[in-house]
Amino acid sequence: MIDRYGRPLEDLRVTLTHVCNFSCFFCHMEGEGSQTIEGLTPEQIGLVSKVATEFGVKSVKLTGGEPTLRRDLAEVISTIKSTGVREVSMTTNGFLLPAIAGKLKDAGLDRINISLHALTREKFKEVTGVDGLDRVVIGIREVKNHGFKPIKLNYVLTKRNHDEAKKIIEFSEQNEIDELHLIELHPVGLGKSSFTYHESMRNLEEEIARMAVKSEIRSKHFRPRYVLPSGLVIEIVKPYANPIFCAGCNRVRLTVDGKLKTCLYRDDKEIDVMYALTANSLALEERLELLRHAFEVAISIREPNFKYMMNLESQQA
Ligand SMILES: Nc1nc2c(ncn2[C@@H]2O[C@H](COP(=O)(O)OP(=O)(O)OP(=O)(O)O)[C@@H](O)[C@H]2O)c(=O)[nH]1
Ligand code: SF4
Ligand code: SF4
Image (cartoon, rainbow, N blue to C red):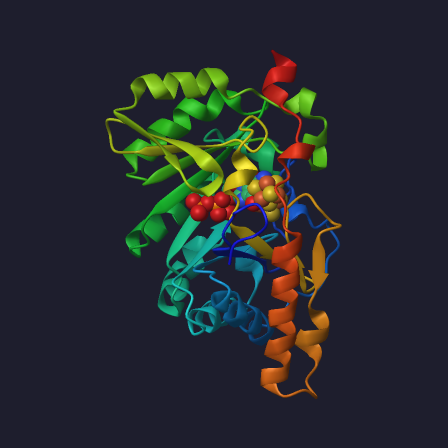
């Protein structure tokens, strides 16, 4: 279903928990604040996923906090898959992947994005708060061994780790990673002090563009993508420096406390669906009907956020 700005709804982003075993200084917690609440059950997530597919959602992304901390993660995945969603993917810090990658594959998880913000042990610890580089690298190799494809790495560029970019590109090529996402720092959390930590991507992107054998623009967020001679795809995720980013937004979020959140940055654009998810006295069809109504309202209030975005690149120029 298309919103008032012509943007289709195709993707549901589900926050499974606010708990995380890392403490990255730029964490945006999907725009939900940091209160620790017990997440929705697999059954509740399944109900939302079922209705989401009726409105055109084809893919579900599991996020957090750290989704792998949910003990029932495999059940969440198989429940979502049973609702007819084509693809279930997960964004993770990778720390627990060595232990659970196989179980997640068996449950039906299609692909994984793993955060890797530094390849120097001390720098990794400085950014994430955890001395976990070795485990994350093992996790990346483990998901490859289990046949997940594509495997994407997420690298958030900041003043604290900008000198790691080249190493991460080389690592991605050597380990036959499919895609590396270079992500602009969001001005939330400590990242709010954007002029302290924000690092412009301009020079790095220009260098990557010069090396590339092919470039294209992805429909999601109009993200530029560059294919290097090695085959590695580098995708540039710049919500602030790309003024049309939000025009390519195809998603709605399901928050940890049962709200349809129509934009990462907008607390005023949320629809509470907890009443439908907890109304056990109602027949299933009645609960689904309530959810359908909530989706209709959510889609009607969706709007691109770029009018509120500041253009850091131009302010820094
Ligand atoms: N402003 C904004 N940024 C987003 C949104 N979705 C993702 N991002 C940024 O992209 C980063 C990586 O997100 P991921 O969940 O790994 O990936 P994805 O955006 O779903 O992309 P694919 O897995 O390639 O489909 C996030 O940490 C954000 O910085 C969004 O809806 N709005
Ligand atoms: S791993 Fe992700 S959820 Fe955890 S602190 Fe870092 S950015 Fe936040
Ligand atoms: S409208 Fe823009 S800022 Fe909001 S969720 Fe979509 S892409 Fe992100």
